[in-house]
Image (cartoon, rainbow, N blue to C red; front, side, top):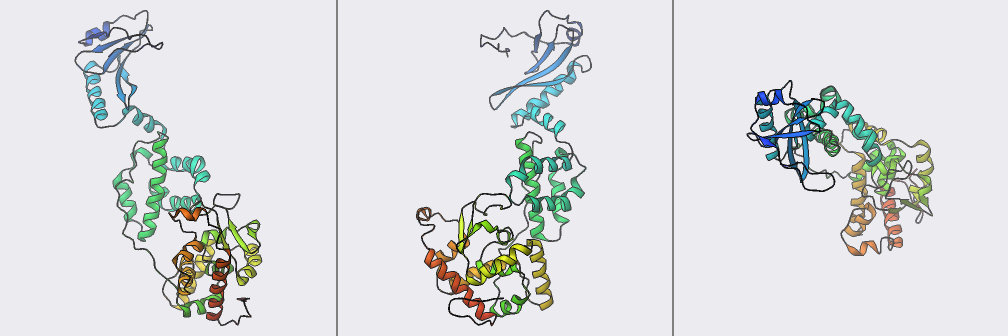
Amino acid sequence: MGRPRRDGSPARAVNKRKLSDRFVNDRRPPKRPELVWDAKQPNLALSVRPTGKRAWKVVYRFHGKLVWYHVGDAKVMGLAAAREEAQEIMLAVTKGKDPAAARRAERSSGTFAELAAQYVELYSRKHNKSWKQSERLVAKHLLPKFGMLKAHEITRTDVRLMMASIDAPILANQVLKSASAIFSWAIKQEMVTANPCKLVDKNPATSRERVLSDAEVARMWPHFDTGLRLILLTGQRPGEVTAMQRPHIVDGWWQMPGKPQGDWPGTKNARDHRVWLSDPAQALIDQHLSERPSAKVSATRMSKLVSEMEIERATPHDLRRTCLTIITRLGFGRDAMDRVANHKSNKVTDVYDRHGYADEDKMIMAAVARLISDLVDVPAKSNVVSLR
């Protein structure tokens, strides 16, 4: 293998010979740096500098790119050891691995705690809307186990043991997802070469279908905070209700930008969305924005309620599902429900008539409010529903 010239001219004639320890030790410093290729071990070369420094190099191609791997100082490492090391390096290359990249990753990865901190600072905080939730999972479940370990030394077995240590199956899946995101990012940054979370099976999970009954809505409503009430009245996601911004309330519409803006995290599908606020929903806005109950506080409140009332477990997201179910229950159809819910659709026409159902949407949300008003036994006057 000849070393190509930088100016693109033909490579020098290959200086190849069957190396020996005597040749290596007695080689005099040349006027210019030279490479002497070992005829016995392919890809292994002795690098000799004018200063007299001698070193072993393995040269290989990875994805079409020429890679120079420093094996060791020839004054310290003998020929036999260099050949053995070269064999292992080339074996790794044939398996699709890049030993040079692996070495860089080993030197730069540091501990998992350091890697996780870099992930948040350099990537997650800027690109992941739910980075705070993920950071909490990492701090509580991953750092106590992996924090002091070298990131590149964490194995698939370690990850499986971590999963087994978490009693809640869904929570374990979320922790696995957070860990995998860190390693996947680190691979792109050449900080590690493998993701130990790959091929680790998630815990089986069934999608929730919990919808509150009429009686449950009536019992729980008086104890809901403004966040929970707005989720039920609007059918929007709990995180979006928590992050509601006053400038987004325009002429009775809650207009949600798809992309993050300031404290607004953006919608889940990154698509602009708007929902009509019924009269009772509008009546809650001022109090909601002044109190601004967090998603965690609302979830805790709801969990305490279902426990005290001895009813089936229910979450804030189940209130969203209940509202959307009411829409179809009232006969407005699945398309109307998907439109209110801001579900993604592959229909080309959605791009053109996204705001073409204003009157129908107003009617839908007013009907939802009337039904809930009847459930909580608060009389409604004409189209104005008071749920205070």
